Length: 386
Image 1 (cartoon, one colour):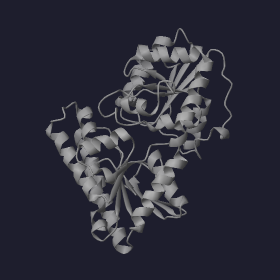
Image 2: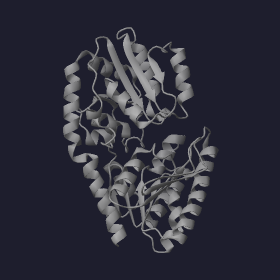
Image 3: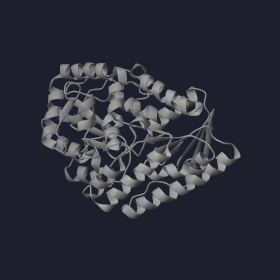
Image 4: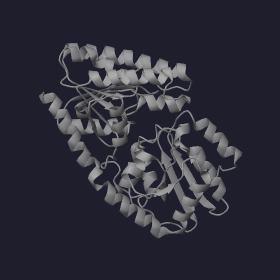
């Protein structure tokens, strides 16, 4: 499995790897390497091979360098290992889409290739750089996407809205399925953590994951600023790291919110994160709406549902398609006043939190990972059997 991110921090890859290992497969995970991590690590039938590339702050040039450097190194590793002992399957988790080329030699030698299309790169490029859909860069991304799908023996993506986007650009319908993001319920298990009785005057929000501008944490910080006098015990806890952290820390200082907003020291161990979620009063998903975010789901949303935590969520097309209004405390994207309203209502009406949790749990039941995992394993088995 090839993924240009960190393992086991990537929840989707972690779930897939554990599913494969649990089914008896031996798995090599080829990923990026953070400072202090071992280059090679083995846990029973999972081997982690970390390449000397990591995420750094920078513009388009830095990002392109990381994309190209990782893809080249991954190609060397996959090719070298597959020549010594052919793989039964190579799975590539995008982005970038051209990462599928790392499996080219293995495919030429008869190994099936499965692609997990985690991103829609044309929409991502257009929103990231503020271009129109006819921009040359967007067209190049669409071309690379078509090549990646063509090279794959099978592919799947994260939502039905993403699948529709791929089909609109010519992908064969029979070739692309949907494997939703879900929570790993062995980790995000509310029975392992005792829920604290809500204290009068205290209300804790939590958000976790990569800290980037598109995830709307500046909107959340401004909403907290608008409520600090009304709800003195309001606190926002942000877990993770990313390129927008420095700006957000400065915003907290400018708004004099150091007693209301705090940041973790980077990514924390999973057990520590789950304990923090269990201790919170609501989970926050403040994604800013754009053509890309209208197609995807944030994984943190599923983590909160699994932990039976009420979710405060910005409205996007893909989320509303799966979760009706009665599932979450919705607010308009990038609107700190409307977010403050949602926080206020949830704080003032504890019974609302219970209703949201129960409704979200009912809606998520057929979408839970134990069910989704089985469909994923059946897809893998069909390719290996072929």
